Length: 145
Image 1 (cartoon, rainbow, N blue to C red):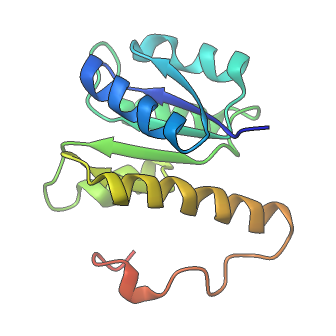
Image 2 (cartoon, rainbow, N blue to C red):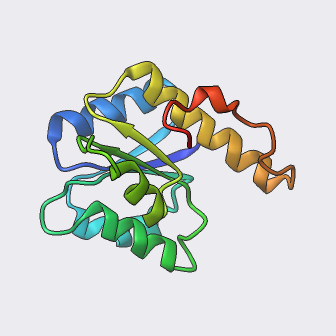
């Protein structure tokens, strides 16, 4: 059964691109174009991963990440933030909100897919009780995280 990924993105072209990439790699992608529907959709779709745009109309992606992490039914779902934010300190704020990964726009297709696959590998190791030790060499993270 394919892993389920919910994609929260208000830009129609980005939403289609992300969902097409995920489906091409055998993931079940569920598009959500309105951030106000994200929490309810996450509860009903029960994704294995959420890809979250940070700059959404009506509600901040950071607020949605914090709300998901505060919800007992959603807190364990890994979140990958995708954003045009690139200023110093933005990645730290996004990770502090609860996102496990961060990819900046414009995306690199290779990095996008590798990050998704890495999050699923991490989730599998954690669910098997094998921990995170030695998962990714420090050199793989140019920003030290």
